[in-house]
Amino acid sequence: MRAKPAELPLAPASIDVLLLPHTLDFALQPQRVLREAERVLIPEGRILIIGFNPLSTWGLMRRAPHHRQAPWRGNQLTSSRLIDWLDLLGFQLEMRERLLFRPPLRSAFSSRLDWIEDTGARWWPLFGGIYVIRAVKRVTLSTPLRPRWRQRSAFLPGSAVKPTARQGNHARQ
Image (tube, rainbow, N blue to C red):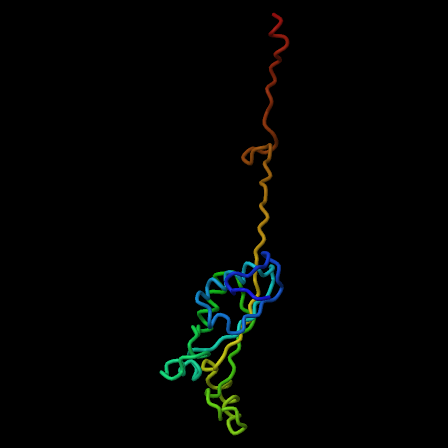
């Protein structure tokens, strides 16, 4: 299927899992895309979001004047901001991971720099090049409770006293 991320041609509550790989990084209105994702997901449905971390070396490359093409020209939202948006839409965070601690260089993927991944995950996880977020759509079902009205008063024990005067005898005379 090919569609705009903010205008999915799907029925409400019809999808179990939605994958957004760098979709929010390049969306003009990322909040609108998340609202659309919330609309099409079923209750307890999951959303998986992958995005570039602007606090990493990958995010800093965006500031360089010679890096104006993809992936450097995207929005690059922080994972904390994204989690706040998801919370407002009724999602509950299940998992957040930060990955790819190597710098965005061609030589960065050589085996000589494998130590950066281990060290980065342990000592500076905030600076991972990408983040992966998994959240579940929580829907609170509200069943209105009807009040049980009682015939007797809460202040008087038992029932109210009924009149004892007979109306039949007085009416005849």
